Image (tube, rainbow, N blue to C red; front, side, top):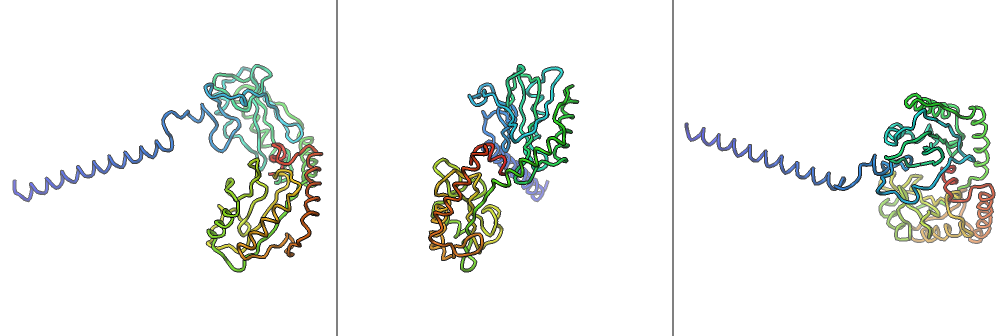
Amino acid sequence: MSELQIGLISLGVVLIVVVLCFNWWQDRRVRQRMQEHFPEGEHDPLMGGVPSGRREPGMASLAQRDEADDEEVEADPTCEAVIDIGFAQPVPGLQLYQAIREVDKVGGKPVRIFATHDGNVHRMRLRENESYDSLQLAVLLANRSGALTDIEWSHLWAIAQSLAERFDGSVEGPEQAQVLARARELDALCADLDATVGLTLKLRGTQPVADVAQVLKNTGFLPHGRQLAWMSDSGVPRFTVLFDGLLVDDVQSAGVDKLDLLLDLPNSPPDEQAFSRMASVGRDLAARLDAELVDDQGRPLADGADPTIDAQLFQLYAKLESQGFPACDARTVRLFS
């Protein structure tokens, strides 16, 4: 064998070793990243909790149950329509969960699910060691997308029938005409109670989004979900800000020309100075950003208008509560979303 052949064989062996080492290193990196996202000791999402993004229904681990899981909960007859599914035989929690885990809305209306254990205990979170006698599908009658439609109700009814066929059950529910009439009535009431107040900051020329966002944070705005918000002491947004009509996370351009401060009345905490607070922050931002502050009609904001608007808004807060929809209440948030 010549020296050239020996050299080529040696080079080939070295290359094989290098490839094996590289593959081992890559595998090790992947495993480390996987462990960062899925550390050992975490429960299977199916058995130990609800998958992220949904909270109902879920599987509650026996080892992690808290008092909230033991509370009996019911559908809300004021703003939900319910379809009942009765099972011929109790259905194990895991089987039921696997069947309903993707049921969270029909069209634009959220669906809440309640399972009945031992005939009268309602669960919004299923448990792996329990079996369930029946199921309720509760759909919201109205929200800001409008009243429940016949298509949405028919979709929910089809889901109920499919579950009944799968688990040898029966379906009961109100007549469609009755449900849709209730939905239209609730939608009209909510439209009368809904209110959003806005102020606009017109920037003098396009400014970098990053710079403007930093000014907002320095002023006191905090990240809340996908937006920036001025928070109350209770952790609920008093008002939020839009960049050229977009949430901060949705902005694609590098620059921004205007900011909108929005007070979403049903979803903000009751406050006798709701508008004054927002206007004060708006004036501060106008000075920091060299911007013009105008109302939602495009007119410069008058200095003496704040107390009058405060009083009007507080009357709307009171009206919401008198109709059974206190601002920031869970029911109110469902309806005004």
